[in-house]
Length: 133
Image (tube, rainbow, N blue to C red; front, side, top):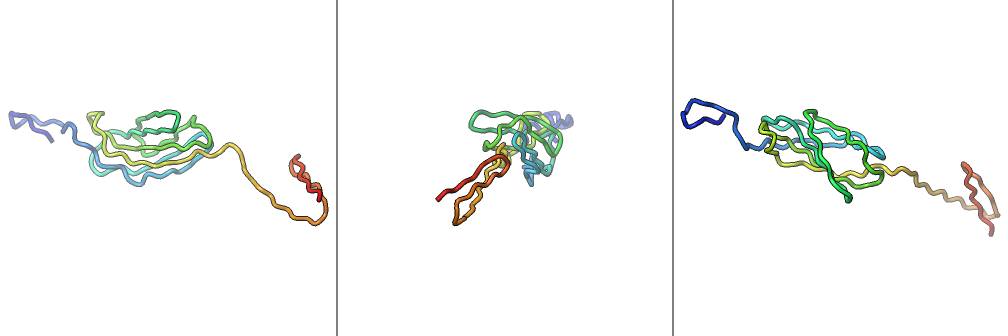
């Protein structure tokens, strides 16, 4: 507690940074969203600020929850996420903890290797694969 010059009036400390959130993890990752969770820091904090950036911009969101799902992301993009606790003055931030994640691609990549000694034609889901020697 902060004490005024009269040595009796008490108030909340101003500008004291909250401790660091711990155990930041991704709990789900889709083509257009990322879910994050973390543990609260020791000491006091009012809420958590989540900031994320990619090559095309940045955004942020405040929450009192210990998890968040961020939506409307672009498939296959590398995002950097920062989570920090914010003090009661709604301004002072604790040191951020970060994680870098890619959203899933919206396509499936696969490769099939088939070896035959004679010419062949194979159809899989409408795709024709052929080999004529």
